[in-house]
Image (cartoon, helix red, strand yellow):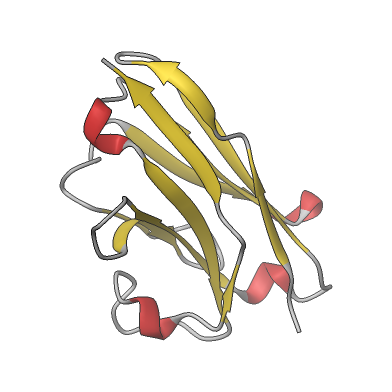
Length: 125
């Protein structure tokens, strides 16, 4: 069992930056593929970014490509999402997710086995 706890969300002005963190429990964190998803009010959950267990492969949604960087520190059992040039449309609850296998489709929520409780990101215009 893996527990994921997100942090780092908050209120920021358009154009600003935030770094989200996701701390994971469990000694096998280094083998998990990790992803970030988000859900805005009234909308479906959508993929944001993901990376492989080794960190050698990263994936981004077109909507955040060039503005976000996903990374991991296996020594700290933590995955990060650095977000820059934030826009009001980035406002959402951001969720961290972990997969025990190498997903066929990193952007698909069903590929992930564990989810955090989410952290709110609000971008004001």
